[in-house]
Image: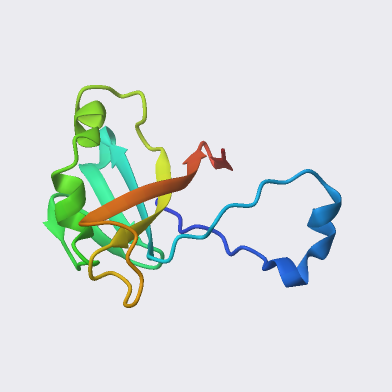
Length: 124
């Protein structure tokens, strides 16, 4: 099973030439980096932090601020269960909200924002 971590991003102060091109700048959400995929060939849902797999083959091997519970109760999983359309896509995001980062409150509860998707070894 291929479940790669997200590549490192170069900070702006080390790559100022990017400002010579059209670009979109957004706020970085202060939470924790997560990734997940659905693979009908490899046991279904796989969850991870940036560095570790925390859920695979129906077995929890760690926890990440309630991410496993959040995903297991999330309606988007129905789309994965009922279709092979997104099999083996790796979704990268930021998980944020209550008790994830101290001193920051974006919302009540917890939320997930996807910032990239890996399909056939290409980031979209």
